[in-house]
Image (cartoon, rainbow, N blue to C red; front, side):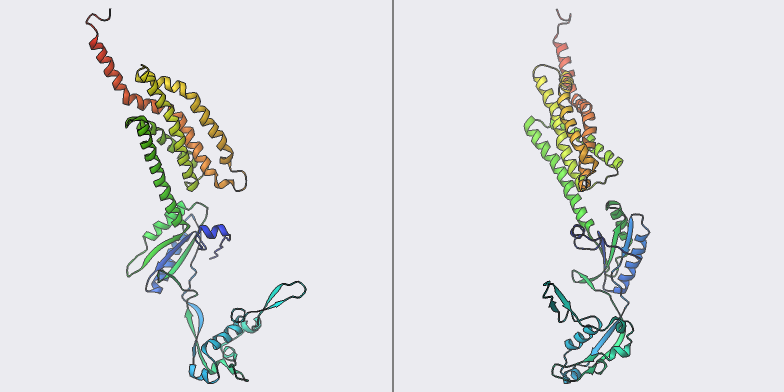
Length: 397
């Protein structure tokens, strides 16, 4: 299975330093059981439509060598365990990590690292007997001692890497989505995680960009609810009424429906930018609704009935509502197209505003007056009935 990691500083920051947006960590005291469960989970995820690649960085049965150093014999020739390990590392790789040395070109001033190691041909064809003949030399010794004289070496299976999370060893399953949207992939991953048994101390956690995305969605959802509540409280104080702010806020549901419709039609996702557009759209549609309800109240105070007041208010306030809304819509169209480089990240914001505002402008001039009449229309009926009772039986003179 080929796993290609896309490089870049932005991806590293968004993924919280992980090589993939989704990191599933399986922890257990039994590493064999955790690795088997990770392989089973990886097989299920590879069959998912939204997953591009799945990679498990750990391998519990990677061939390795275990060196048992005879400390007493090594000390007789002036060697410490560190000296033995350093000599082996230098022979198989280089001394660049152990004792780095640099040469400065006197002409250019460039630094070049100088390392010493066995040739690639020797390392590639080295067997256990040749490995045991790696020369060791003590600090004050003039002769070399073969490695096998102080070290007992045997072949073992060893993990390629050992990772911990909160002091517990974990097996990572990196999931790379096929597209940029993480919502659908996150649902598939969560569905697969639910089927993982958590008995015998086994735990499953998900980290990466999905974790920060869920946290951002939660914060924006709370922000939208808080914004609506604050707008209602502010309007309640301004209109000194509990009912009229509720009528004004009736313009928000059609706007939310328009946001969803346009995002679906354009193939955009519900992300942080589109949620920011929703918050901006709420402010604009509420201001349009305020124009109708406020002017209807002014006309009613001048003597008009509630029905006549709201009808006249819609006729008079329609022009400023269309002017402000069209100006916003036309200004957002270039941003919604996302033709320039880098502008595609702001396109969902503009599309959310365009969809919500377009539907809300059309619906507001019908829905808000209808709710206004439903709430206050009964008062007109009561007033008419009262007036009829006050008239003489013969009717007006």
